[in-house]
Amino acid sequence: GVQTCALPISVMFAEIGVRSGSRFHKLKLEDVRYIESLNRNAVFHLKDDVQIVAKGVPLSYIEGILCYSGFLRIHQSFIVRFESIVCAELAENKANYQLFLDGIETPIPVSRQKKDDLLKMLYNQNLMIF
Image 1 (cartoon, rainbow, N blue to C red):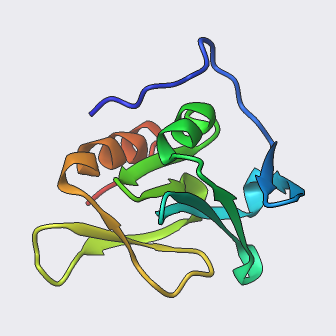
Image 2 (cartoon, rainbow, N blue to C red; image 1 turned 135 degrees about the vertical axis):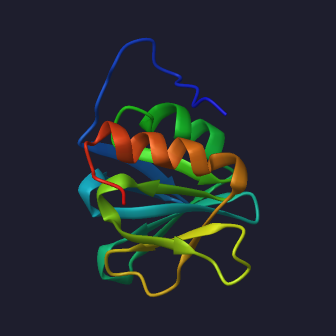
Protein backbone atom coordinates (compact mmCIF):
# COMPACT_ATOMS: atom_id res chain seq x y z
CA GLY A 1 0.00 0.00 0.00
CA VAL A 2 0.79 3.63 -0.28
CA GLN A 3 2.50 5.21 2.68
CA THR A 4 0.31 7.84 4.32
CA CYS A 5 2.02 10.88 5.80
CA ALA A 6 0.63 12.85 8.70
CA LEU A 7 2.42 15.96 7.48
CA PRO A 8 1.04 17.90 4.51
CA ILE A 9 4.41 18.95 3.10
CA SER A 10 7.80 17.32 2.74
CA VAL A 11 9.24 17.72 6.23
CA MET A 12 12.45 15.99 7.24
CA PHE A 13 13.53 15.68 10.83
CA ALA A 14 17.03 15.16 12.20
CA GLU A 15 15.80 14.46 15.74
CA ILE A 16 12.60 13.44 17.48
CA GLY A 17 11.45 13.46 21.08
CA VAL A 18 10.30 10.18 22.61
CA ARG A 19 8.73 9.83 26.05
CA SER A 20 9.54 6.59 27.80
CA GLY A 21 7.91 6.36 31.19
CA SER A 22 8.94 9.43 33.17
CA ARG A 23 11.89 10.18 30.88
CA PHE A 24 12.03 12.24 27.71
CA HIS A 25 14.64 11.18 25.14
CA LYS A 26 15.89 13.31 22.27
CA LEU A 27 16.84 10.83 19.57
CA LYS A 28 18.99 11.55 16.55
CA LEU A 29 17.28 9.78 13.66
CA GLU A 30 20.66 8.74 12.28
CA ASP A 31 21.06 6.59 15.43
CA VAL A 32 17.76 4.75 14.89
CA ARG A 33 18.15 1.42 13.09
CA TYR A 34 14.52 0.33 13.23
CA ILE A 35 11.31 0.69 15.20
CA GLU A 36 9.35 -2.35 16.30
CA SER A 37 5.79 -2.75 17.52
CA LEU A 38 5.86 -4.97 20.59
CA ASN A 39 2.96 -5.46 23.02
CA ARG A 40 1.28 -2.21 21.86
CA ASN A 41 4.49 -0.26 22.42
CA ALA A 42 6.92 1.23 19.93
CA VAL A 43 10.46 0.07 20.59
CA PHE A 44 13.17 2.25 19.05
CA HIS A 45 16.26 0.14 18.34
CA LEU A 46 19.31 2.40 18.25
CA LYS A 47 22.96 1.86 17.48
CA ASP A 48 25.01 0.22 20.24
CA ASP A 49 22.05 -2.06 21.19
CA VAL A 50 20.18 0.74 22.98
CA GLN A 51 16.39 0.40 23.12
CA ILE A 52 13.86 3.11 24.00
CA VAL A 53 10.26 2.02 24.63
CA ALA A 54 7.43 4.46 23.89
CA LYS A 55 4.41 2.97 25.68
CA GLY A 56 1.10 2.93 23.85
CA VAL A 57 2.42 4.60 20.68
CA PRO A 58 1.21 2.86 17.48
CA LEU A 59 3.60 2.41 14.56
CA SER A 60 1.06 4.07 12.27
CA TYR A 61 1.57 7.33 14.19
CA ILE A 62 5.36 7.09 13.92
CA GLU A 63 5.11 6.13 10.24
CA GLY A 64 3.10 9.27 9.55
CA ILE A 65 5.66 11.49 11.25
CA LEU A 66 8.81 9.92 9.78
CA CYS A 67 7.59 9.24 6.24
CA TYR A 68 9.78 11.96 4.70
CA SER A 69 12.80 11.32 6.92
CA GLY A 70 14.15 8.15 5.32
CA PHE A 71 12.02 5.58 7.15
CA LEU A 72 9.87 2.91 5.56
CA ARG A 73 7.22 0.60 6.99
CA ILE A 74 8.18 -2.85 5.74
CA HIS A 75 5.93 -5.00 7.91
CA GLN A 76 2.97 -4.64 10.24
CA SER A 77 5.45 -4.68 13.13
CA PHE A 78 8.51 -2.90 11.68
CA ILE A 79 9.67 0.46 10.36
CA VAL A 80 13.29 0.64 9.20
CA ARG A 81 15.66 3.50 8.55
CA PHE A 82 16.48 3.13 4.88
CA GLU A 83 20.16 4.00 5.30
CA SER A 84 20.56 1.18 7.85
CA ILE A 85 19.78 -1.49 5.25
CA VAL A 86 22.87 -3.53 4.40
CA CYS A 87 21.30 -6.46 2.54
CA ALA A 88 17.94 -7.80 1.40
CA GLU A 89 17.50 -11.50 0.71
CA LEU A 90 14.82 -14.11 0.26
CA ALA A 91 13.84 -15.69 3.56
CA GLU A 92 14.09 -19.45 4.07
CA ASN A 93 10.46 -19.88 2.97
CA LYS A 94 11.46 -18.40 -0.44
CA ALA A 95 8.26 -16.33 -0.43
CA ASN A 96 9.23 -13.28 1.63
CA TYR A 97 12.23 -11.02 1.85
CA GLN A 98 14.17 -10.16 4.97
CA LEU A 99 16.50 -7.25 5.63
CA PHE A 100 19.81 -7.14 7.41
CA LEU A 101 20.55 -3.80 9.05
CA ASP A 102 23.81 -2.18 10.05
CA GLY A 103 24.80 -3.43 13.52
CA ILE A 104 21.76 -5.73 13.88
CA GLU A 105 22.28 -9.51 13.74
CA THR A 106 18.64 -10.58 13.56
CA PRO A 107 17.04 -10.19 10.11
CA ILE A 108 13.90 -8.04 9.85
CA PRO A 109 11.02 -9.53 7.83
CA VAL A 110 9.48 -7.73 4.85
CA SER A 111 5.81 -8.52 4.32
CA ARG A 112 4.63 -9.43 0.83
CA GLN A 113 2.37 -6.36 0.87
CA LYS A 114 5.34 -4.03 1.58
CA LYS A 115 7.85 -5.59 -0.82
CA ASP A 116 6.85 -3.27 -3.67
CA ASP A 117 7.23 -0.20 -1.41
CA LEU A 118 10.76 -1.34 -0.56
CA LEU A 119 11.66 -1.89 -4.22
CA LYS A 120 10.28 1.55 -5.14
CA MET A 121 12.38 3.17 -2.45
CA LEU A 122 15.48 1.34 -3.69
CA TYR A 123 14.70 2.51 -7.23
CA ASN A 124 14.07 6.10 -6.09
CA GLN A 125 17.48 6.09 -4.36
CA ASN A 126 19.06 5.20 -7.72
CA LEU A 127 20.37 1.88 -6.43
CA MET A 128 21.04 -0.66 -9.10
CA ILE A 129 19.18 -3.94 -8.66
CA PHE A 130 20.42 -6.97 -10.58
